[in-house]
Amino acid sequence: DMGGHDTYMHKEIHEQADAVDRALRGRIDDRFSTVHLGGLNLDARDARAVRRVKILGCGTSYHAGQIGAQMIEELARIPADAEPASEFRYRNPVVDPDTLYIAVSQSGETYDVLAAVQELKRKGARVLGLVNVVGSAIARETDGGIYVHAGPEVCVVSTKCFTNMVVSFGLLALHLGRTRDLSVADGKRIIEGLRKLPGQIEEILANEAQIEELAKEYAEAKSMMFIGRVRGYPVAREASLKLKEVSYIHAEAYPASELKHGPLALIEPAMPTVAIVPDDELLEKNRAALEEIKARSGRILAVAHQEQEKADHTIVVPKNEDELDAILMGIPLQLFAYYTAKAMGRDIDKPRNLAKSVTVE
Ligand code: M6R
Image (cartoon, rainbow, N blue to C red; front, side, top):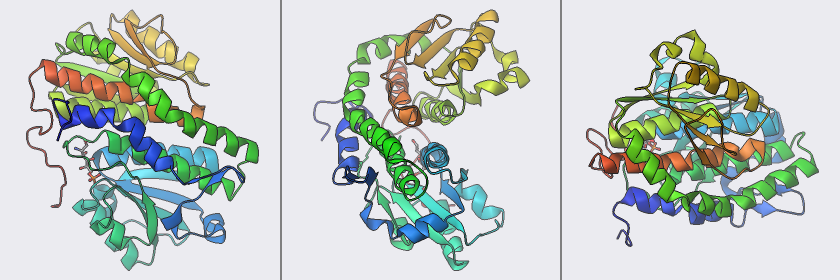
């Protein structure tokens, strides 16, 4: 039942405030400015013994893992990175006993992720799951984990589950941080930021009409560039994947800092750029990148916390804590992908050549 929506994608985009609310429910501990994650199976001593975090997933779940790795580094100061599960499993990785491995998956059935988990377990590693489907294969094979509680996701293209994965990583980063050096004051600040998310998601979705207009305009492009820096880069990658999947428009994501090392050669009026521009310590650097694009007559659509003078259009999103901004900045671009695909008459819930869960190699 699509409850008045024309597609599951549209319905699921609109379910995100409720979904995030569910991910937070019952987990926040105001007394100690931390969160409780029941199924984690990692006591404070284990948490303090973690020397590295390695996050594994595919597609959108891998992108959620990239944001998660940044949050864990920032809030818990543990070196962390994400890698596609398929790459990891084919390169005979060094499996380290002091590393905490985290497998991320909506379905909990993705074969490459499951195979990576099994290989890690065989080598004696500690593996947690960050999974949506309760009781799925990956949830069963891991030593513990976090359910992301996004609810059933029907559209082949992941939206609300991505958001809940990133929120769940925020919870995990806060939890790990508070077993280490994150202060009570910073813990409080992050909790306040998390609590603001559902309301801020509603604000973003209330801006739907502007996004629809922009999508119609940009749907004429043959190709689009997505850029971001540090926190904005995985957001750019995910937005680029979303657009490709549903509209079949070619899109590339690059770190804004890499533009002048090659992709700037592609910039011209027919190649629009979508730029993620958070109001954080990198704002001026991002503005400089917009200027470089403008100087080559590139069209720019910015997603930012305030109007960007150099951009042709800005989608303004509400500001949260710097460490949590990545959770919100991709949401308008889910709608952008949806409306672009709609303008092009695509089969939005079932893009060609794709399946909801990839249970083969
Ligand atoms: O079920 P999973 O999260 O393990 O699936 C991973 C990818 O196949 C999935 O995210 C894919 O990239 C989606 N089509 C993204 O919209």
